[in-house]
Length: 448
Image (cartoon, rainbow, N blue to C red; front, side):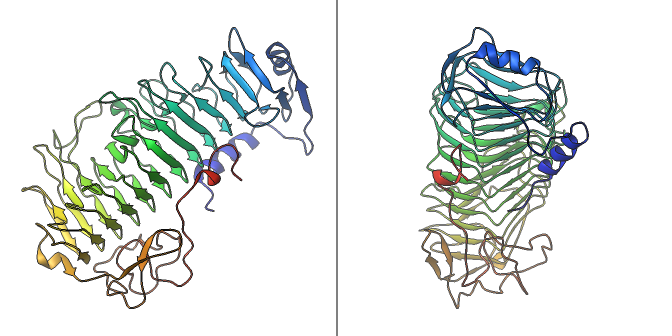
């Protein structure tokens, strides 16, 4: 697995201020009050373990010491229904294995840098975000966020004032069953805010599983710049991966089933994704309410210079299209994608859009309003593998058939190297394919 830059940054920051002993002491406590006392006298490197059971704290436990781990006795066995944790000006703190039910809360303020939130469960409705992160170099991994029906997001990445939290690393989490029925405000992940769109968060969102992400049309809502969203799986969700505001984000290698990708903003790369949907719109070039958003604008921004390349897109009607708005996509690229529909035109771009088309393979429909120079109408010979993914078969006309030069596309959605002239679509033909969609066994508190 690729080690995140966020992890490197967090580790370097921790090592700069604390030495963790080779065998750190473990302190077992039985109650919230004894945990608070243990924290107040803790030394860097200690692991403080709260006994299993249901804990009703009148106020959050205050974490005032750096370099410590606060853990449940067993993952999922220590439950807060009231209270929770309040982090102070600390660094290198880990919160591990708790269940946050009822009104219990945990947030990461700007001064709590290099915090790790791992193997916790956030259940039910909360007032605001289930977890809000404002600090730099925070790792959020192997958690479950589940069963919410009210307005509010599962995970909010924010920051102090007009700034954005930097280098968040969000991985191997399970986002499940957000059923807020309002028009807006039920995202699984909201990375930034519209008024912070120009700020570079440099976050990595990878290897997360989303199921029934129905609280909003945006399961992953990006509202900041310079992020990476890769290798996630979304199943049976109203929510898409949406680049709502901001620039220069890469969306790579995601597996989406009855979901899709929509984008606004400039200079994004949407590459190596696999989208299989009974919905019409696998990829949506978002039109804008303005040509270029100002730093505090909440309006949709026209997408400029966005490249959508080497994806495998399987849908029904218009698999790729643009939505409403006066400012149409400008200087974008749709290249080397396998696009399989069932009937009609698979591409439906609004008049006035300026898109370069090349090297696409279309089957099961017509090219729609994509010019004939931008695609070949030929059967790509997709076959379903043991993991349920449609891949190129031997002898596919998509093999070695890409057009143009996209030097940054060096691997496919299996993370296998693309050799010679790359194949069209997300899959570089190989007899040793490895990729499979994520399942509950791969993410959340109990995963490896």
